[in-house]
Length: 404
Image (tube, rainbow, N blue to C red; front, top):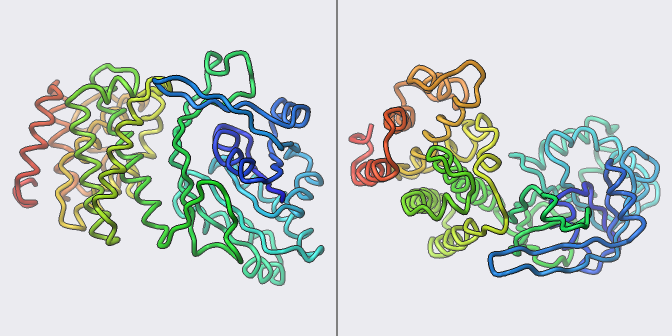
């Protein structure tokens, strides 16, 4: 069995490519980083390290090779002959890999190959539809019919935390990837064409939108809230931030608000979501990951967008009749970070209102706008974590009208 892993970076090698290899596939990585391609071709393996506070566990991922993505003939031929494919290149890079995929699909069609499922491991809302649209723009009408019948665009939810790889983590081996051990890969069951492949830790689920929202509104939202509150208090790392009792309480309650909203909307088991939150909080404490508040909270403008982790989770909660008292506190801390990273801006109510209007598309007379601004004013006044948490506790006991 053959697999193509488009992207030989941290997620490609540190997660999905490793699962494919451990599932018995011969894995061909496609990447444009020549040192990575050369090393994979020469050694046909690479080291993976699971890191935790309790110690490290090393393993060698075998039966791998690579081709350079700039070689359209080699890349498209690998795609034409594989049994399964995955991408982990980053949302901004997707348009650049489309030509190779289109050529690979044309060769598959000419050879009469079986259907191809592409597992899309990108941090992008509606990734399957967007990526499929990019590909179909390059196809003829006849090729589009082939695509619709034979190509499964399968979204995945990446839950494994893979930090920036430092030289210390590489430990003398440039190809080593250090990751946490959590390794489940939820995917959209309904998107597969033909039989669902047997891949280690693959979790096919329907409706998959639940898993997408669980990752974004529980994991990502909680992570961002931890990072922004940690940054506000001068803490540099996620493990240090989550070990601060007040931050932990705020983060846990914010995730519980999202979990309750998801449970109501999708009919999902709340107890299972609570167990997931407990596991996430444990994983956030993993000091061996060395994850920073600066990295996790990076690009605050994207993370404060209307449908993203903070505003999107708050909106979902309101829609399910749940007061997002703790989520909006995280959003206020995100606004604080956003202003700090905006050239020429300085902290102040006008700057915060501008972020909420321009970045989050909120109206000044709206419910969320008022809740977030109330917290922001507390941040502006130098409020302690204890005061912020007590304010959230108080809002949680009020009706929605009283909160606003």
